[in-house]
Length: 428
Image (cartoon, rainbow, N blue to C red; front, side, top):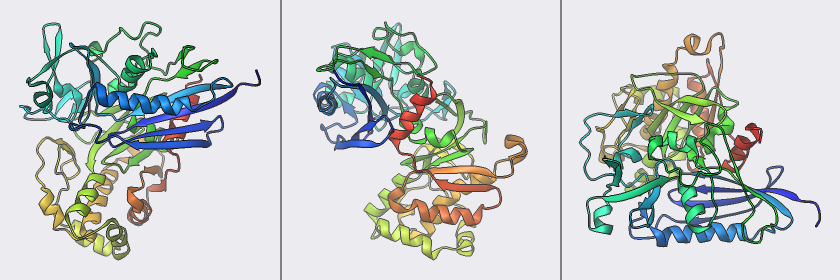
């Protein structure tokens, strides 16, 4: 046998697409593939065996195309943050995603669990505890099982579910992942974690039983998609803005704009302050689907906006929040939104992009630079997410408004390289 070649497989399991990359040891992409999984079954927010099996088959197919006899493979993965996997009492595996909200929620305010606000989309709201048993209740449970709730034997991470139940690989769960989703540690099954103890650092499991493999395959426990998309940026910047569906602002230092102490756990960095669920990509998508405008109009809107027109728009009282999340007008998480889509649809593209961009400007202006960053006069801000081509023009406008204390740049690190960086920095 010749020299063993090291390669990486990166799998990103999102709500809409399952993405695969094959990289060489230098981080160069050799092969990539993606499939749409959003509509695998009539209830895409709640996957059962048949749909999960299709996902497992796609993963196995991608891995099976690699010549494992001459290569040492490391598998890295990230998964949508707001999802919950486990095994039901009937031995049926399931995956419940962030969009599968409970029918009934009597919470009058945002609750804090494990250091994070448990928004309506967070998994903890789907679980009820009766004695020593756990039950799952979602809007689709009634449709699928003709019951209001179903008993769950144990919970695990989504990739762990796939590896253990479909590919016969035993892998460790990730504490980082579950701290990100507010699932209490006592709810996580230890049945599949015999080889490794729980750890707050990255761990891997060497497996010599993978099909057609003569070499060991290192499988890392998955981390949340926020960590995967922003990790490389956070280690070199003071602040990261992630322009995604429900946007986030991530701070290396402790920044608390309200009574909610909200954090995410990042590998090798630890707990960092995060403002999450800021209206972003979802607004633009809904806006273009329900008005005469398209993304090109939103991109061109930035050409019509200067600082004077920007200030004329934002002098109004407004909010873009039309789902439970963070309202930058009130600097707090709200369970009840007070803006409707219909109001937003009446905005011109110019007004919409100004209101949207001002969300981040208000938060940055609220930072006490000396208190949080000492004598540092310029803070490095990295921006992740392309937003259909809007990011560059949006960044250029925000530069003009906040050029005194902030330096802005777009992140050029993709998810595969960011996940590899997580591994490299863990000294494994």
